Length: 82
Image (cartoon, rainbow, N blue to C red; front, side, top):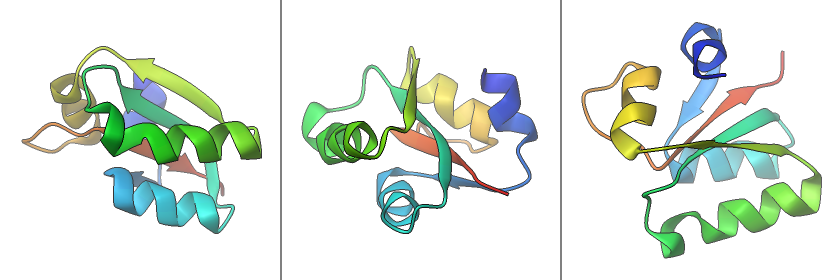
């Protein structure tokens, strides 16, 4: 599933950007790092559940950051709808 994130033409990286996209109904699927602080991703989880958006767990923030092509870890990311 991370391959889809790597190849996605449009995506968000980070919790703030992902939340904004979710609120605007632009998200197809959300990726959450399992080692992210709960208080950072809890609102994202709630909104995904409320809107019925699939959450894909990723083992570490570093792994998610690598998949996004950035040099730092990421708590969350999303593939945007086309």
